[in-house]
Image 1 (cartoon, rainbow, N blue to C red):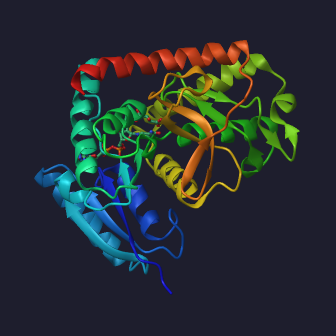
Image 2: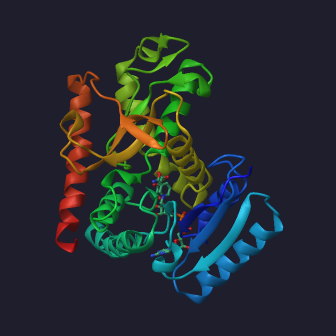
Length: 328
Ligand SMILES: NC(=O)c1ccc[n+]([C@@H]2O[C@H](COP(=O)([O-])OP(=O)(O)OC[C@H]3O[C@@H](n4cnc5c(N)ncnc54)[C@H](O)[C@@H]3O)[C@@H](O)[C@H]2O)c1
Ligand SMILES: O=C(O)C[C@H](O)C(=O)O
């Protein structure tokens, strides 16, 4: 018997990431090749954005995806999030010329407060939320705080792009196949302060740290390369990463919904105090996923260098989250 469709809301649906994301969701790459989906797409109430969204919908129709059970276009989050099972919050206010970081935080706080409230009011009580729009961890925190009737654990931020970038850099350095790496993680904020940690990583049971055995490369090449990869792509393309970000969103939600088969993946999730991260901070952690739930991998040893890196990214996040407290 065929499955009932699930509802997937995507915000910023006419943007760059949306264009790289929607077709893959509709083809079954995110929730499985047997799972019909209804897309509930949100764009700003602006003629140009709504027209662009119409064009994207025409293209979705023209793909004749057998799993695409419906498409809706909206400009109001209360309609876009109605009964939704998944919400991918991609749309955000980009930093404009002369805009200070505090202005960016405030502009996004407004968007994610409204969207959190709308999810609280109308989404499925089990909605799984992924925030992609930057600053992703803080936006997820704002949405979570604005949705007190939904489980806090259902609000997550995207660190998977950092995780995938780290895997790829390590594979190139040590000469293994990128898909063979296990037990890699990225701690903290989706920003240049993130800490990509390969101390526990293995390939065919062998330690990646031992294979590389070069702490200077870790500190001076690997971490800055992964941390500044987004900026390097903007410099090269003149636009921020979109296909790789959409790919990471697919990976994040697929593993959350369908399970990681015991493997570690990185998700930005609200802390319950693990590793000394204050409760409620949305932080990148290693997790395993099963039956639609994630579980933070606990008990890992944190050495002095790692603690220093974790403290730095935590301090940045606390600064961001303190900066929006008065708006919540
Ligand atoms: N977490 C990550 O790893 C990661 C990676 C890459 C990009 N990003 C972020 O993702 C976001 C989207 O990137 P993009 O390249 O698609 O940008 P984009 O500017 O091409 O598209 C964003 C879209 O969101 C829409 N939008 C803005 N505010 C909205 C709102 N309140 N409701 C609904 N839609 C809204 C805009 O109209 C636009 O169409 C940016 O914030 C970017 O910095 C995050
Ligand atoms: O949009 C950006 O500022 C960069 C993006 O978060 C990325 O990591 O590629």
